[in-house]
Image (cartoon, rainbow, N blue to C red; front, side):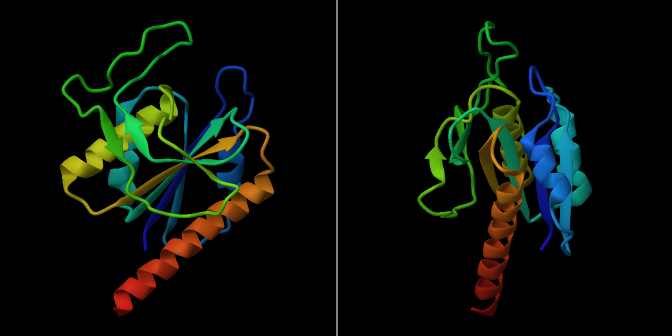
Length: 176
């Protein structure tokens, strides 16, 4: 299974990003590819990584100031380049929401969210989900927001557990 795990580098007042730390600490696995993006509204960087790696599964990681890890259920057609600026659509004729396609239960300590905000995390989700839909590819996509002060070792364990769970599901489905 070809898997892409992506996250982001530093931004605004954050000199480091928990997602980059987690990605750099992931153990190598067959088929696993990773990317750490600069935090910018650049559609092409997200499309290019999909074209380069042709994944069957995409796991996006975003840093947040929330108090727990949350699985995002959808991307919103909205972006805001500054805290004080007005939100604008990512695609003027695009759908208002695009649902993620990875259904996974990670237990009671991991929350569910239906708003990924309007910054680059949400932008990456929307761009990738729209591209996946338009290309007709069968790529499962999930996104997790991880608190900036979260223990990176636990973050690595979580991502590794997600990958193992999905691989086990795929093997079961293949046998059936």
